[in-house]
Length: 442
Image 1: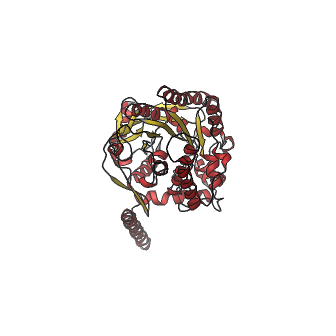
Image 2: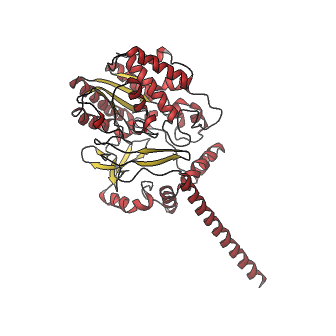
Image 3: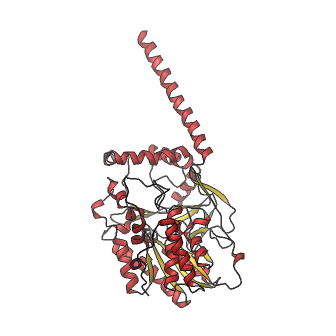
């Protein structure tokens, strides 16, 4: 009987322990919700577009997002489906800048600190801030072509994100809209071969049925652990708060590759633009045709065109790349590769561009650890790839200086505005950029 009492005691203690853990997690979940970490993008912010997949729904009401524990911002959309002020503020036939791009151009910071808003502030010229998260160059072209017909655009500026714009075009149209949020319908199966799968209508219906539970986090052919992780990622703010920190610790302990071997962790791929797989030659050729289409669009409509190359944060802070101990085909990655390809293409076709990579490297500090500090660095820390407030300010000031210095936009009192930009650069960042990094192609 003693052994029975022992087992009974063990079972009871185990139940009490598990119950305590569950209660503690529930309390912690309530806590992170109270302090605001994090809340998702509002449902129905997007809607389906038959010609280029999806877009931001026009006239979406203001909605607050908590990006960090102590940092929240509001998002909305205006009459033309842009995260921007109402177009009613534009004067009749007023010359403007059309700013296109993906999530870097859209936001991930409050409106007043977006780099498009900074350009508007220092150039004193209206900027139509029309970035859309997840867009590739082809979709940006299609949205821009439509907007050119509606406004008196002087200059088109395209924010080009180095890490995924090639991928977005290769998988185009990779998203559809389910329950107001874009979800992937074309999946890259193997980055080494370029194989991709187009989900059937049946699979998309399964995604729709699973949306409330799993969002867009459930992989194809999921096992029970995939479902648990997807459910927590979609529904638990506590999970989204602590898991990135656990992953960071795993990387620091150099055990990620061992977890991958036993199928607990998945391989980490950088953007395909950094690799030199054979199949990428055709992908690059088709992608560059979309960039060339932008040039033709600008020439036909007699507009100036400028591409802004937005660097991946591991390019700016190479210590992050060195710290990551398990990246698939790490020895095949060249962090400067996409910039070399694009610069060569821009020169060949006489397209104006500003590569922010050397400029951001100039202003970035040398890291003394394997993580960023959102308060002093240029990107958000953790797994968020986007610029923080400081990064947005730097980009806005540098682009403003460039477009005024090289007459990409024509405005009055140019010299006075350039002096104010320089004063702000010194005030916020302590120094001015080297002139050779702000050279003009044209």
